[in-house]
Length: 438
Image 1 (tube, helix red, strand yellow):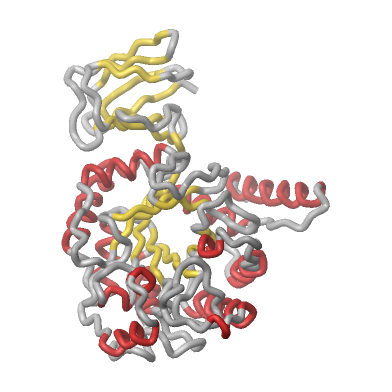
Image 2 (image 1 turned 90 degrees about the vertical axis):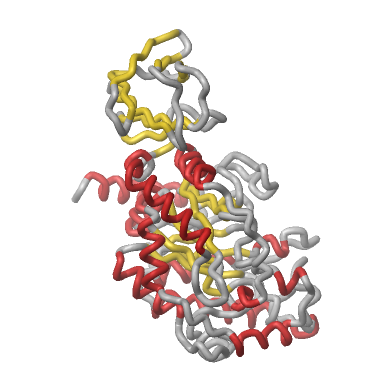
């Protein structure tokens, strides 16, 4: 048995003993799950894909509720949905070339439309559209072929089905509140999740969204998550469970998700929760919206995206970077250009983020650090001086520019270590490697 496998087994055993000591039933991840968590934490970059019939309206994925569109009128768009440009191989190839290790695809968003051949409802891409193809089947086949993980986003809420008890969204979409039936809706979701986890091979994670729809209820809403999480882990023990509920992780979850913010920050107002010890992921858009919006051309620069990726790594987190394909099935050229540029960076500097942990020096305005064993990578975004002081406790054996191997002088001070440059660092991410003494 390898040392890593022995460690995973030990962690699982300690969790079991902890539950017994507290005389409570709690989730104990399997060795396969712990291994999957580590692989996830090492990945550092994934690509989020928000795509559904909402792309036809070109107003973003929240169009139905934002515009109070009647769900029956909205559903008529399905009969014209024929994304002739969709090509799973092109999608996966472009994403893999960017250096991403996994894809998270919206299997079913809040509008209730399923992007696979589900037997639980005719409101799906195979039965309700002239396209008639199972997108998730094609994506899963191509991901497995190219060796990239497939994660599936699944919404807990539904602006179309009457049996979903409406929260604060979807109030103007024509649902009949008299037909709310949580047991019916809960069973429907679990049957769909069973399909996704038994028909499409290995699924890396289920990424839930929508808990916040009942977050302000006077009486706390019981989502029955424990049983649902148990179902997922029963069907695929290595499948990770994450929930974008903007709360501290709860029992049964394997990763912690942050929306539009790095862990420990709350600039967007949705991530004030404590940072757990689970593997971390922050999801962020390339432009403004998640789903395709025709007037949203406010794309972040390549420099900004690369620095955000590095900053996420510097906090020990993955970046799940979003793209919103057009109604014809093509990823927008602006998004492809940025994926290509990120790929050029990861092909050169990927070693400084993949398989790393948060560095010794926290992320700050000038940049951040990542660590791999005794190698500390210093990522400099914006520093206008020829000297950079790091509050390091350890001793530096040697320092050099990562890509040119040019040796750099260092000086030990009472407060840490100073690095001296011949020229002021410049570029998207000026990387210095420090070899630390054991």
